[in-house]
Image 1: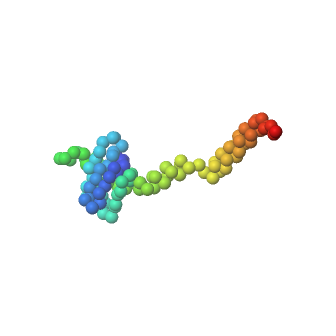
Image 2 (image 1 turned 180 degrees about the horizontal axis):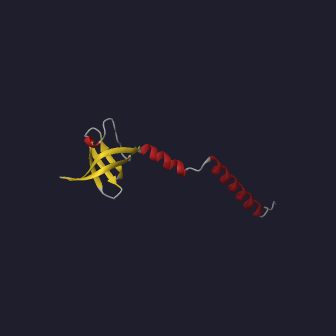
Image 3 (image 1 turned 30 degrees about the vertical axis):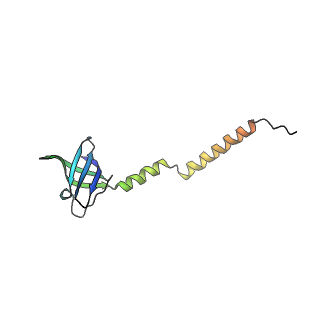
Length: 108
């Protein structure tokens, strides 16, 4: 199953993952491979397990860092340079049309 790290406290060694099924899973640092560090908003895959204290994530694997996801999302929101140039050209054309429609001002 895949999910997103809601929060993970490295000092305490635990946190929670929001699973793609809409449920929350407890994660203990022992469920991570040695040398793997996770942070809030990281995308992970894991094995869901029903433990004595509720749902837990086991065999957690980091798929994508949250910072990379944020960069991709912001890149999708920003228009490319070419798109920006085209939009500017269109805005200029519209402005010129509006200015030419205005009646000439009378001078006294």
